[in-house]
Image (tube, rainbow, N blue to C red; front, side, top):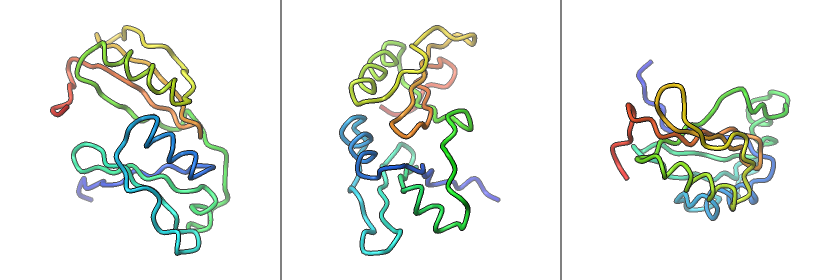
Length: 141
């Protein structure tokens, strides 16, 4: 398998609420919800750096499409890391996500590897880390 991951899709309870959180609260660019003309097809995609897309799709629809039972979201199953270019940006982003309705799980703090990071949970329970790591700085702004 070649490393061609292009979309990461999060299962969400309420697609409209999640769209508002990611688009309006976090400022991620999107064309909004598409695929409403298909039963179980409504989804939204957000443009991330490097051509990567973040998708949000209702958990009920993922369950229907895969045939798997719907299970509760586990905040510790995986994290999504958002790297920033300077230490102060961690605090800025953490405040912005809090204002957007995120739950701050761990306030920004100095890390064991010489960086600075904090954790928040989105309205569906997905865990995000906002991190400044001087060894892994993003190449774009």
